[in-house]
Image (cartoon, rainbow, N blue to C red; front, top):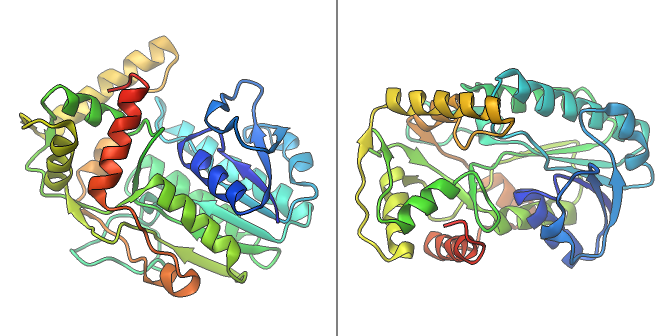
Amino acid sequence: MRVLLTGGSGFVGGHVARVLAAEGHELRLLVRPTSDTSFVDDLELERAVGDLRQPETLHSACQGVDAVVHAAAVLRAVQQGDFMHANKAGTKGLAEAAANAGVERFVYVSSIAARGPAPGLEPESPETPLHPVSAYGRSKAAGEEALLEHRGQFSITIIRPPAVYGPADTGLQAFFWMAQRGFCVRLEDGSNLIDVVYGPDLAEAVGAVLRSPPQELAQYEPRSEEGPFSWNDMLTGLGQVAGRNLWIPSLPGGAFHGFARCLEYWSALSNGVPLLDRTRVIEMRQRAWICDASSLTADTGWRATTPLAVGLKQTMAWYVEHGLA
């Protein structure tokens, strides 16, 4: 199958590229002239120069492919509107280009943030109406809605992973960095529940979807078999892979918000991307980010195979190897 992949120079997309290449798909990577593709430079793939912020550059990239896997996203931003511009408008432009090019399948790597947190301690169905609580979540939900405008023109699969971790991730890097130094800050009492998925396992889920018969619309939420975990569980695991008994100071939500605002302000001055922004703090304060992966398993046979302890160990090793922890 000929596949156009967005986000292939990033964390999730890079792992997806490796899985799809290993399964024999012909890969075309959408890249900007400034994209750092070092994570996938060892793979045999075609490069199509384009930019999701410039819809006119997407039409040629979609020509002649059977499927689009859209894994690119803005995860952290200084201005809240930046999420919507990238994650809604970019998805809308790509979906229109794919429809015009006669693409048969479109796989959108969305986020559990689009569906929203569970109201209790039981996961909601992936078909639950979306109820995001953050700017990032609203932008990913808007991306889903823009994609669904093309329902019937191609097969649509929406994958909403929870927190994704693994080699090459930057979102959770700060926690690994702190753990290596014997401490890790905790939001409030650390009892909040989260599901997680290891990056390479998530990539395998994308591969499983493309191996399975197309459906008009499928919505899936992959997760680790062991979850959900509390933040305290995650911090215990970080201490174990760092080989340290962590000092874990607890901070109130207001302190996290204040720190995020400072990082946003500094990032605006330095033209960078904040390690933590207010939308992430809003998400971190929710009681339960939990998923139901049963429909994904039933339709494709996929199951996450990486235990948390193994995934954390491999992620820490990658950070240490690259001087990031």
